[in-house]
Image 1 (cartoon, rainbow, N blue to C red):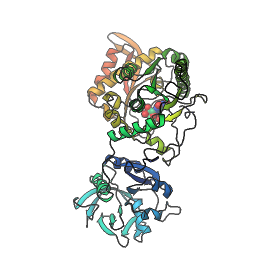
Image 2: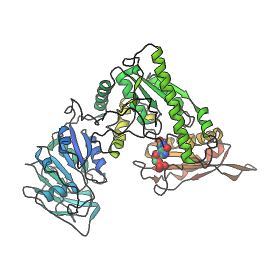
Image 3: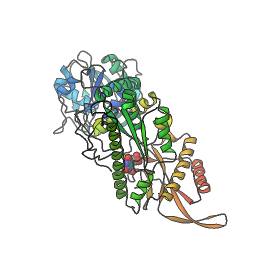
Length: 550
Ligand code: XMP
């Protein structure tokens, strides 16, 4: 909804630890992305093995790769055929760096094709589960069962390993499904070790990382915390930092990291727009202010937002109204903080100066999506703190820029963030307002929706299903239906239950909640909420539906 954050143009921020004097402090394995659907997953799995990994576009310059001093290079899969015109090529210099290389799927085909083996275009592909038969386990597959399942997704097929290589395994459709040349440190597998359907996948990756590349397990939540604290201190010095806290896991973890690093130089601003879920505002305030002792300005802006939402029914107009007001409130608070500091007699370069830095919870997936992390600065269009005016100039502090979502949660847990916040389901910036569908978000409707949502969350938690669901929430359409309760005819609200499973919100499936649970939820809503007389379940996946209704 919001524009990209307008701030002082940030200095290009190379992600993670790949910049600066300590470029070799953490071991890194580079994953080159040839466009495969699982490329991000490869990087995540490598990190699961305790080794830091970055996903870079396949066309990244060799200098960029050398600068990272990688311990290993993985070539991902991709949709092209090595014979296709314009197929992404292999930079032969990669093989001369003295760094082990592992090609996966297209990555293997590229290596084989380039080094004199035989890859052929096949009419029939091999998609899904396949049986892998090891003929010679070599180094890469040593100690693993002779027969195992794996996950394949390819049309072109390797028929002969290049000279100097050993063929390690085959499947019914792939005469050569794994190869290695230990002398040159080049390895290839046709199947996907990164997906769960390859049971020995993680073991194979570990073998490559530990035994072939000689990596140590240095990447962990604790090491991330340590490293980020050091980096934040380096960036911020004695300057003042401001952070917009939404209560979501990203901004919470980012704020805690910054607080650990620079203590009271940080002030968090929590704008309660009155569109939160029940008790959420209080939880954020008490967690940060009381438990973590983070300086926190909490603004109760409910009235202001309700005024702006008066008469607004169209979804985009709602989002815009909320986004614009959010910026206004946040800006006012930032200015107040700056003025307060000035009155305190500070200059703008010391501890008492104007907040020069703004914390953003940009994640690694945002970085990848907007250019692949080759060092280009990216600014997330943040749903909560968007489009700050030009004259409020901040330098961005982005301590989560190198992290995947699951790593953010692990860091949150490491920092002692309560489980409720660590595992909070995503919640849209415009909050409950965009769940009052087709009508105005009034206080009365918001209250009904908030109570219904509370019942839903409580029952889902009780059933132990909260973490399994990507999101679960209620929607309140602006309609009423007829009912009968006691001896009375009612004309009340309809509450919609929406619960979905998903990995990334790009696609989602409606969750098959148990009937008994649905019944408990529905009867509690109707019994406890006087205004509600009907409960329905949304059984639409995404696509064709979106997760939210507006
Ligand atoms: P849809 O409805 O597009 O939602 O399937 C995908 C994910 O994005 C969240 N969402 C939003 N988040 N501001 C946000 O911060 C918004 O305006 C917004 N709209 C949707 C939604 O909850 C889901 O996780």
